Image 1 (cartoon, one colour):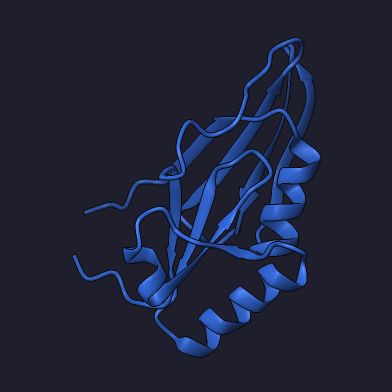
Image 2: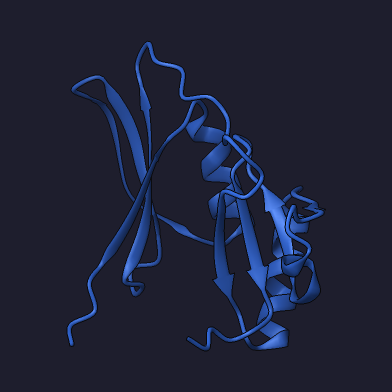
Length: 130
């Protein structure tokens, strides 16, 4: 089976703050960036080797607002405790302290971080056994 590529796309009011959160904090890279493309500015973030990336856009004259709930999560599974600890330390070192998860399940083996627009990222020290 061919694994599809995945793009998670979301609007934001603050591209610069999100770039700092996802690049400085999570360690992702800017894959592509654009300005004023039919009224939108945007950025694609990820790793060139990963089958996914994130696209954040800002529409001129439009307010995107904050996350509707604290359960809007992106979860990264990092089963190696050394890699997980380094990822948590990178987030905290970039100025993003962990927050209590809304669902206490995520606090058992992970840490939750809230981005500038209220969406959350969980760094989970576990494998993804589905």
